[in-house]
Length: 327
Ligand code: ADP
Ligand code: MG
Image 1 (cartoon, rainbow, N blue to C red):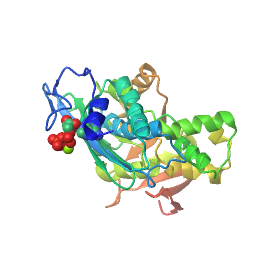
Image 2: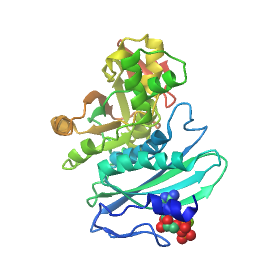
Image 3: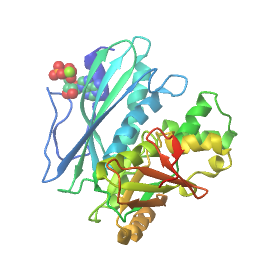
């Protein structure tokens, strides 16, 4: 298929968003934002680095490439609106397979009423899918990781460690029985961005949010550093599905703390707003769990503390923990 008919094949006939003035078909796309802040993010998936044919079908590659970007929009409190796709196509990927990649994206785009408004197509050595998203937020309602304050309740959506469990299974490094395996594989291949939960929080004055892409150990440290506060997390309170809870701790703990790619939301709110967060969770059918709290830091460099069987340790960005008796 030549480039022209390829672009024609992925072009939408109608756009969901009335604010699109020009989608695919000119030198660039145009949309009009009516007094909204525009949120934009980009994430790239490279074959052999972020996925392989052994662990993902072409449809999953597309689905996941868009899902991880939508998760960034959710973490900013934005309504997803548009996306653009830059794709590098190698010789060993057929036109039908590339079509499947786009099907995966379109499946999710339909759910969020997102329009594909442009992109770029080139050939190269391995498949690279780079997705840029645009979302909209009412003025000054973007959610920053720098917004946490001492006294806040710390919470996380969904469950942790699932995507890593799925990947371990797909790589043959760990065995699960059918039902658990299917669940974990789904969590790895088709993450569910927490958009509706984040939007339910829009009435709240102050919410800090960060999405769990590298593991909660990493994201918690990002919030601590950006907000200049200490975070205190109770390991036993971190939400895990039953299948994981039954595993040996040495297996499960690294997945929960630093497995990453669960694309849940880690956040903090003033204690008075915790009830509103629980209502938001209910309204969006999202599990939410209180996992700790935010305190003032005494250090020049803030820390994340992990409590486990009442022992207190430092939780490093890498997920590594070590005891510190002096604190
Ligand atoms: P230009 O030479 O002006 O960059 P292109 O031939 O690259 O134009 O693209 C033509 C149109 O098709 C543009 O609207 C562009 O955004 C869109 N487009 C090209 N490749 C893709 C793609 N992989 N996905 C989505 N839109 C694409
Ligand atoms: Mg181009």
